Structures are given as C-alpha cells and as structure tokens.
Length: 463
Image (cartoon, rainbow, N blue to C red; front, top):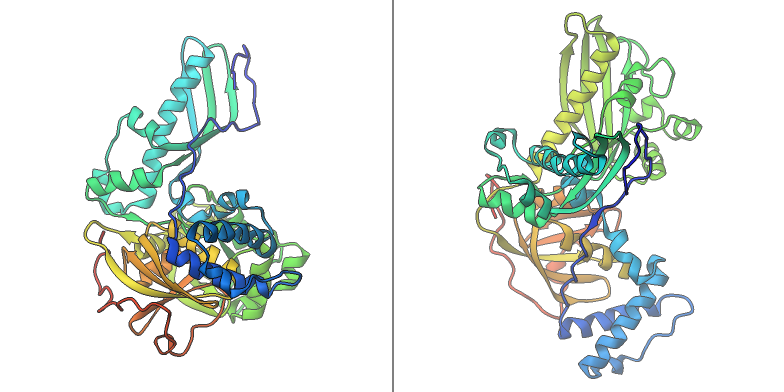
C-alpha cells in the first residue's frame, strides 16, 4: 500500500503484508488409513442419502485405499461439517496458539526523508516492539528481566503475518497501528534456548457477567442502567491478553437469557443460554459488592455452566483522588489480571524432558475426530501424537505431552476439548461431547499399546 500523500490521510483498510504458507500435516500411515476407512464408512453409512461401501473394500491395495479415504473424507467434510476441504485450515485457526503469539494494535510512528522510508522504519521498529510485548505476555513476570532481545532482522524472520490500520502519512512521517502474528515454533525455540518457560496457548474468549450490589443488603443488578460495574468492564482495555473477555451487549436477548440472581446461583440453564448466544464455552461471574464508600468486595466464579467454581475473593480500596469510574475499571482490570495469571500458570511449559501417555478419544462422529486431531496438532502442550487404533466411537492415541493432565486440559480447553485421567489412561473428548465410559480399559481396542506407568506429579512442567 503506497503512502505518498502530502497531507495527513487515514487509510482504513488493513493490509496483510506478509503471509507464510501453511505446512502440510503428517500422514496417518497405511494401517490407520484402513482402520479410518472402515470407521469413516460406518459414519457415512449412518448419514441420510449416503451409500456405504462393502466391508471387503477395506482390503484393497493401499494406494486405492488412500484414494478412497481421501474421497470419503471430502464427502464427510461437506456432509458432516458443512465445509469444503480447502476451508478446513481456515476453520482450524483458534484463539489458542494464534492468540498467544499475536500482538494487536501496537502504535507505530517514524519520521524520515519520505513517507515510504518512514513507513518501512515504523514497521520494522513496530515488529520489534510488538514482539517484546508478546514475550512479556506469555512468560512469567519473574523471567521478564532476562527475556531475549533478538535483532530486528531476527524478529522479521519470525513474523508469520502482519497488518496495518489507521495509517496516516505526511511528507516526512508515518503513523499507524500494527498487528503481528509470530511463528509459534520459532518463538518457543527461542525461549527454550534461553531456558525461559512460556504459556502454551491463549484461552478461548470467556463471557463476563458483572453483577453489582450497591451495598451488602442491596439487590444485585446486572443489565440495569444503574450498574456502573458493567460500564467499567466495557470501558477497560482488553487488547493483547492471554484470556480475552467478552462483555455482552446487554440487549433484550441478554436480559431475557440470564438475571443477576441466576448468575449468582449460578443457574446452569441460564448461563448456557447466554454462552450459546456468544458462541463461548466458559463464563466469568464477576461480583462487586460496595461494602463502604471506598471499598469493594470482589468475588469470581468461573467455568462452564455445569461446572462453575469460585476461584477468588478479595477486597479493593479506592486510591486517594481516584474517581469512582476509574476505581471500578481498576477493579475489573485486577480480576482480568488474576484470571490471566492463573491461566498462564496453568499452561506454563518449562524446559526439560517430555513424557508419553496413552489416551482414549471418545467420538460421536467424524466431525469429533477431525476437531480432536486438529486440536492436538495445534497445541504446544502436545509434542507428538500417533493413532494406535480406531473404532466407530473411539480412538486410541499415543501422546508425547509436556505437562500433567490438569495442565494439558487447561491448554486444550482453549481448543474446545477436555482431558481427564481415568486409571492408566487419559480421556479426551470435545466439550459437550459423549460422556466418558465407566471403564474404558474393559473395552478392548484393535491395538493395545502399553499403558503409561504413571503421570506427572507436582512441580514445573518440563519439555
């Protein structure tokens, strides 16, 4: 995008200036291809208007099987997922890894002999500034005094994409806001070489319900115009965070979905209604009670509609000379910062040695398998994975992981999955998917790899 205007001019269309081509994913292998073909055929056979191939086709030559599997895969993607195969990679992008390694709307500015040169200098400096902001966000505050300082050229090589917005130029200057997404593999490699731990991924956005009480004995309010706590959440800066927080619009549909009392109970059906509207899986109930003119009692409930847990309670005092609006915004920032710190700690990866575990993925259909496999491939917590066996409703996997089940679960929740220990196995399922079997080990798989001798204990996650 040329910037040659002699007077200040705003250019509102962001420009994607660099895009690194995506890499090709790993092959399943011949044996699993044939197992997948049988499983896929079973799923397709249950779809209306679909003719299943005879079982004998599974013994065809590997090349033929591969072709047939790819054909059935294309049909399944259109029929089950409603997308064409070429669109899968775009749909696979999530807030998880992309969010962790992206810095948004960083102001940039430079002055030079002409606007093109000023723009070049501003972009180069902005990529470095954004890179350092991204590193500070994903690393432990205790490590931030020793973060690596790569050169501008090294930073440029780690850029996957960037875009510019609100561009303004004069004869000698350039100003804009830059959003940069960095190569997660390159960033992790840099931090590992320097012995610095990092958060595995960003959280999927959560929906906040700010419930306010003007006094301990006053009725709670949520959507009313008399709720300054809701206004504070709307006013705070929520860019460049590991846990994005969505503030509802407060329109009639929100008002009829959940009340303040239902949020505080919490009422799982009411929470599910508002989460379904915004396409989110987790809610944050942020309650603020005015216990004095200058004091707030804050409490946090967080989780899915059927698994809410109170994670923190605290009090906050107004600073001298601080306005009430600024006080409430600072309180909202404190809660958001606490949530982000907890997320960073739950998904933190340190240097060391990875471990292998056996996992069982529960499936309702081919769409579940596509979602689970893509999530495993994206998650930095999963160094490697292999399919050992597959049936119509389950897959046995060997995972090389960089944390215990709780940390891996925290990271994969950002991808819409849950992970839990069940005896010698880990159980992986989509959020809201099929339930965990009572005894997965009692239902044998076509191939039985060795079960893990144990899982991680406490202490740092290692890689």
